Length: 157
Image 1 (cartoon, rainbow, N blue to C red):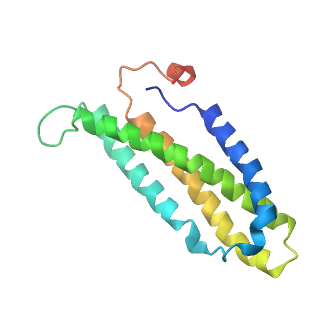
Image 2: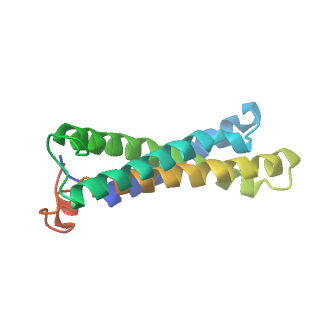
């Protein structure tokens, strides 16, 4: 399993944004209100993953991998990579969706409901972006200090 390629993520964001925009155009009038709390759960996940990434990074760079107290088990690092990969592949499409919603809302900002929903959509999009960044950071922090620097970014998965 190689690192997540940023071009694949960008393609997912753009594809979901285009398809999502079409869905929003057709169904926005049935949407519930988009509040500030809508995207906060993604921000909480992003903060948790970023904090875990710093723990993993400090343990790996300090050579604390293996058995014993204060050390990370290698399976913990592998599971952290899987969580990072899963989170980045959740965050990217969600980011595309919220960008589609924002594009629609900004085009219809003369409507009161669109103005009311814009703040929540911005928070949700920023939270999704934070999740993508935190997940990529977690994946990066799980790399062995002996790995070549970012040459694996272009390796096939």
